[in-house]
Image (tube, rainbow, N blue to C red; front, side, top):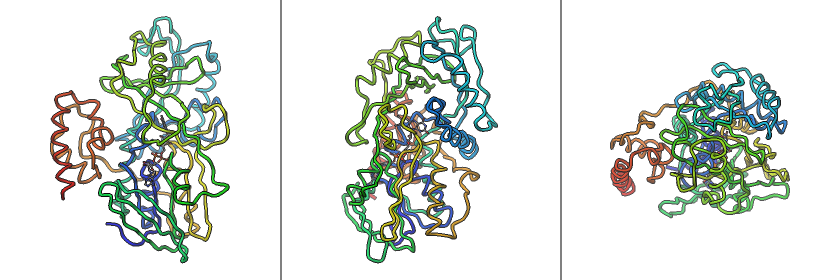
Length: 461
Ligand SMILES: Cc1cc2nc3c(=O)[nH]c(=O)nc-3n(C[C@H](O)[C@H](O)[C@H](O)COP(=O)(O)OP(=O)(O)OC[C@H]3O[C@@H](n4cnc5c(N)ncnc54)[C@H](O)[C@@H]3O)c2cc1C
């Protein structure tokens, strides 16, 4: 499966690794992408799932990031309409937190920082008369509406992997990079481990420019440390956990809410089938990012945020599902987590010619532009790589109807195992689809039995 030589090896199959694999392979580079768990198994399936400019970042004058993200919003809507769709937001207004004029100015800037082709402009609304007011506490009478986009984050990663595979890339999940060494001939010697079979194999590959890309997200610093590649000037990461809760439906309708809280943070509430989804928190994180899980403090905080806005009261006991992810933020020694930029930085280590390129920070929204910037860096090593292309070529579609709420067929399940690298129950039920959350209990039970027999068969073969 793994060949002896690649132009680039990408470590980490989150959105950034997958996006780079797609872009580079489409330019004719020979690409290997390895992921230690499942694709999108870490931060990239635990996001708030917004493709957005980041209205909140305007408060910290991060206009560059907002502009770049708004431009990407248009691009992603056009290349992946099957998983990126417009979403209207309502901001219930609380004058004690931000004056109305400030919200209005923010929304005006948001409307005009980049042209919108498909999304409506923001406006002020009277919540005692508008449908967005139904379900909110009756004393909240004033609000605003604006539009952004919602994305199936985990599927965005898979579609990028599928596209990279179509372009000839080698794509492996459950494969961990455990060693990295610059050899005398100025190439990387990489040690990989098949996590499932616990077999270890060593893969050496030779290229003219010999490049490894560290796209390990929240593991970026630790990965460099474990492979003895840390340098004095290696940037630091600030790891910040964010939790979402899924609770019984708080309102009808396809719109979302941006709630302004007394501590000046904002949390979002999204429609989520028969449920509502609410997040996120921002808690400094220590430990292994894959083990991040909702704390009781976070659950109470989010319930409290809901209870101050919605008539229907929610307690932590009502939570039907929760998920947590760890933001890999570029450490700029800012004490207030809200103010740390959500933009990315690329760090190049060219010691001895063989490039090791590490990514720090970033958003789902900007994964494609990040990949294009990486390509510009690679141009030094591969002058013949072509021009930017990923913004105009659609991502592939999935033949299985993943949003249906009835039990999937055997063929549906086989598709994910045979074509989309699924190896565990969770890979299908909570990432490639959300059947684990949305299927009725009995159907879920039957699906799990069938799925496990198919997975067993696959492991034997
Ligand atoms: C709560 C929360 C909400 C967010 N909301 C939004 C949002 O609404 N919109 C938005 O645009 N962005 C959002 N983000 C940010 C976005 O989710 C992240 O920036 C993005 O997912 C990071 O992707 P990544 O590929 O860098 O990291 P990851 O998705 O974490 O991928 C890195 C991968 O590297 C793998 N790895 C690590 N070490 C190794 C190794 N040795 N060998 C092989 N593989 C390895 C890991 O297993 C992991 O899967 C949010 C983030 C959080 C936490």
